[in-house]
Image (cartoon, rainbow, N blue to C red; front, side):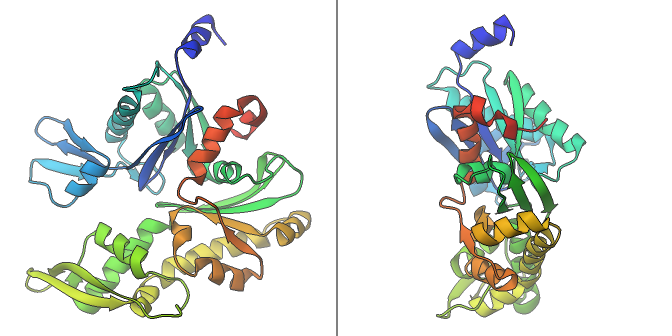
Length: 342
């Protein structure tokens, strides 16, 4: 470490960032999670100036005039729009720096395990150009395991399935490294899209992605429910374009979600089938932890348990386990730095 790095370290606090498709969360060392905002930026197309970021920009999504566009710079867990992602990261860092000494902080950024070197470089460059002095990376399943206090450093295996907004990742972890991983770009966003398409086809109603997400949260399920549930979906009539509302039920939404849910279950099946006999025996004893926003879908844990014949349990805080794990690495860096990747 250079003298300048040591001096900067005296006046800064390290950060961890879960740069998610749906939400961005930031952890400040010794403080905890200080930011949890939607990964959306509203920009004036005439001036290229940022109008709003996060929750405020989400409220504008789909409602902006022609000169303003609301953009989600992350897609499938990776940066889809480099310039907008840099602006978003810079804004979030500026927001949390207002009342803190964060002079060119060191940052750990969570990444999907299946991203390419080009995508990895885009993450590093975005963070560096936003004012950080050093960027470290950690794969999301590993971060989730650390954040949920799984014994990642031991020789016995633990298995994590992280179902986020853009990706679903299954990982078998042992001795602070990943023994097997698989990542597919099917997760919460694809569930929302499936609901949008189903309602459009079956009810001739066009709805937006956030209305679809709301339906998923309110009545979505992967397995039959004990009590029937309904929800009034609002949008516009496909034929006339006029405002319209229809009542949908949990059976319909479960049918809509069948394809993305099946893809998620198949990822878990493949991971288990390709794991060594010794690791499989460990997983049989310890079970499989599911985390991420997608893990909150009703009945998903039960469906995976029925398919795999294993104990499936949900992380204590599935929406924050990734950023909490990254933060734990910051707080215990000498002990846990080996879980970071290059």
